[in-house]
Image (cartoon, rainbow, N blue to C red; front, side, top):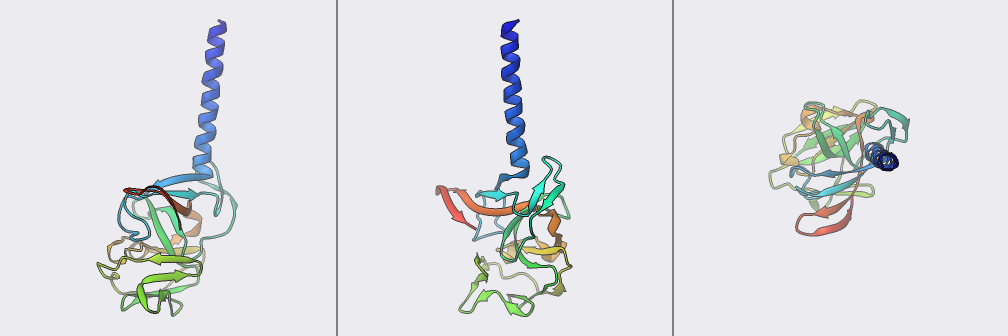
Length: 198
């Protein structure tokens, strides 16, 4: 009987610990494995990325309902969300927020008429403190916009502009549907453990 009590206590302790860990992963922080090349050269297939799920607020564990809002995504941030088409989890870069007018002309991303590309290097875009190293080997994708992003929404694109299924196809995403902000790559195939802030 005593042994059964000890085993039950250990099982309960492990179950509570597992619940706490899974709750933290659901609401606080998680990792994401990059499945495709759509974010090259910033992210490569197989990269493991640390995601801050508290970046935009606190959510109910396992359900995803937002309890407390803590701001909205800004242009340049790499975010994780579910595709509005398939429900599949995606990772892309926010290129515009509600109220912005976006277009792509001659391969250049323009937001409110201003290009994000660095003047002497079209493969680099700067969004304030965030930098995107683009893969333009397949071009920049088709002509897009001008399109105004609805208030409360964001437009997301992959950094591999000619090889990314993103907001140019499925439209803007409600900012409230963004699960979290990608902070850094912590594991890259071939390089092992690393720390590449995003």
